[in-house]
Length: 349
Length: 114
Image 1 (cartoon, chains in turn orange, green):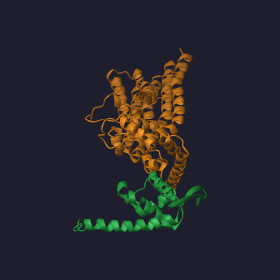
Image 2 (tube, rainbow over the protein chains, first blue to last red):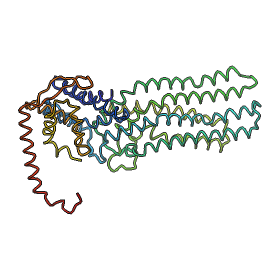
Image 3 (cartoon, rainbow over the protein chains, first blue to last red):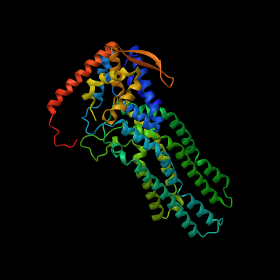
Image 4 (tube, rainbow over the protein chains, first blue to last red):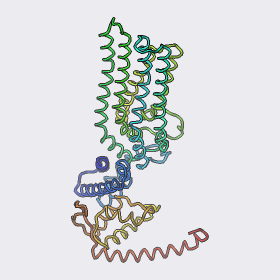
């Protein structure tokens, strides 16, 4: 509902607050609220209802003759034309498509978070079992411990990959949005701004908690390593500390990722689009849909690096470093590029 | 799907004919219109609002503050005598228009399954 009000505010923000305009805004808001509650009562999701109401809103230009604001509306259409200088090669994004895209992000937000967390947590069993076997804490040979640990690693990675595949299935209908094959439309932009405004507070809170987790993640490792220096099970405690680092990194991701969907949608639908003659060419402008575009490539790549490093150089004792680093990097990308992209867009205006 | 341009001239007729039955508010009008048109035409809220305001300015409808069935305050629109006359004129005009256009397109769709 807040998205609808924010949308209306955005649409009317260009005009002076005259009594006739305020009256029109109030009555249109009532119409939109009625329609919204009607769709909700008919069993639609909040995103679908908001999308339909905004699709059915129409165009303020139509009100111009009635409200006597013809001269005031004209500059905005001129500004719109200036903002979109290249002739649109692709059909403009519709609110229906954009809300469907947002709905898919919203639906898959936990899958994404769990999938990424599974990747980060995947080496834990291997680490703990290996060191426990070496220290005689479990009745397993080193080889047996490695076999079980590796199996667990592959199971968790397979789980993560399956989740990513399932997410990509949810997005199959929105391929043209993900590949930026659309041109911007004012109503989708206004809708996306309203959507992200509504959810940004929660995202920032989640980001703070996640950053706290990541900053604190080395603490158990340091504490366990320092307090057990020279103790009989020194290396076990250190590896346990490493496992706790991974748990904290994964916790941070689990807190943050379910809250980044609205921002991701906003960045995707308002971000740079693929322009004429650039099919398949991905320039520096096309790197902003962080999570949806990077995640499916990023994590399998991390797995490849991890396994390659571990097997080829027999570096199982150190190669786990890939996971905390990859986790931190991903979190930083998800949180940081959003802010950077936003600032860059603002400066460009 | 009928384009917004094709139907524009007849929005007033649609609204006046609905208000002939009883006074109504904007959202209810929108619902009644979509109930009649189905998938053939989806009216935009700004189209409906500007049509109602145009009719009000022309004196074909008047507005008053009322309360909807759900108990919420709504601006109701009511057809005036002048609106009734305009509706009759517009209905006649539409029938004439339809008849004239039909004379041109007569036979175009012959052989095409209805």
